[in-house]
Image 1: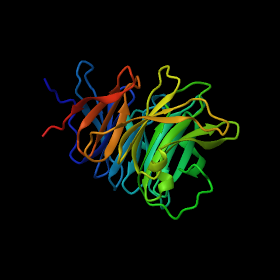
Image 2: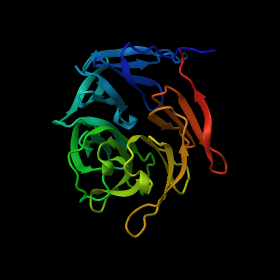
Image 3: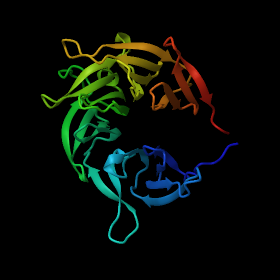
Image 4: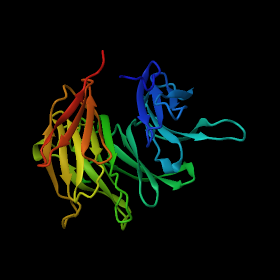
Length: 325
């Protein structure tokens, strides 16, 4: 029997569940930021507990800050601005969501952002409409207002690459979800732009010794390096000797295996093990389950598809969920 879990506001443009699925944040076309909570622990339904207009432009993406840093979300708006909102208590007032930080973006729009947690700090990566990537680092783990720009670079393998002004329509970032003392911070990033060198998904890793970000892998076959990337997703790793990353382009969803040991040039081995097709149109979003064994995807056709590999490593569509009329 079908049951309504939550009724979203009219004009809702994006949504995001927190880490344990107990809270839902949504953004709307009129710039409204809303939060839904389960009031009754015995119920699976959610009720709106906070709703406020935070921007004149439409909110196009909401991302939760990792839970160890409190209840906070980052919002990207259609005008390219990026802001951070935190749930706080002031004196005897009830919990309220208040503006915590506005990031200065000047003339370039923010296309995507993701938070990454290392053993030492919290980082935020943002991809911009000019093809640049910015990495911010939290200076005080108890104060989400204090961020420092740690690095800025372009999504290219060769830093000497020359090209004109980029026009990037979208970008997608996914952090390596593994956390350990010996694990270097890393993320994968791809662009949808008019500059082929920017588009292909690259894995970036932080070099602690020299305090810089280095491209350690490119997830594209030689003839596909200019393909525009729609979305990327790095799978959780439970004991695999390699990493698994999904990359969606106009050719389909590519599943990549990425080695863990760099060669003499510092690059990681890569191999495309599957190319999944089935969506009619662009793939907009991909999410792995907690085991990193099942991939969910959806896109412009409105269909949610679940993908898995069998014991022989052959990937196939496990199920599809059609949109309701």
